[in-house]
Amino acid sequence: MKRLFHILSLLFLLLYLTTSGPAAASAATNDTYPVVHIKGVIRYITYLGTYGILSEDGKKYQPVRLSRDFRKDGLAVVADVRLRDDLMGTRMWGTAVEILAIDDAGHYIGPDDRQAIKLLLARMKAFNSRDLALLQTIDPATLSLSQEQLNAWIGGYGHFILRYVEILDSNDTTLRGYALYSRELLNGIALSGNINYAVITFTLRKTGDTWQFAAVNSAPPDPALAFDQYVQTLEQRSKEKYGTTNLAEWEPSKNH
Image (cartoon, rainbow, N blue to C red):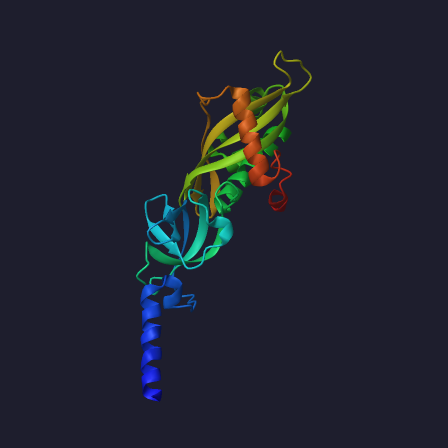
């Protein structure tokens, strides 16, 4: 009788492991499994009754445990996950992953954002103080610029304020994105008001341990929105993502 009980217990355990999701196959965490950063969308897998993450490059991931806050089909997320290809089960939709950190994509602030903000704030500082040496340190394209040319470039403007930054794509040596900033016309009156907004695209490149501007250009306007509406949209995104529309006041930026 005792032998039969042991056999039935073993059969029950095997049945549980083969019909459960990836969490059942192994609850152990092993730091040797690779950690990757993914951007994607939460998908509800109807036929499995579970949630997965479909990455931007089309890869499928199945979280071991997904918080209720993120169980929303269509939610864009970013996450740091540990690949757990040791976890097996019949209810598998993609590679099993252990979530280390996850956030709504609209609220996520990563190292790329921070690096871009750091250089863009330095650029605003150089313009505000007309500091040619600082500008040349971060932007090689200005190495041939004279102080007189910098003054003429800035003109009668001051109070340059970085309002919003968005990273479009990145790798280990290049960051590409766009930014909203404002500047104020000093000692003058403009028909459209003294505060002027502009959107720029930028490319940052890393040489050795140093990041610098590789390109800065005026961004074309969004054809779907009037420029004032576009500015309001970007400022609203900044409030939601950074909690402010003046990134010099954003708390992490004060540590740079």
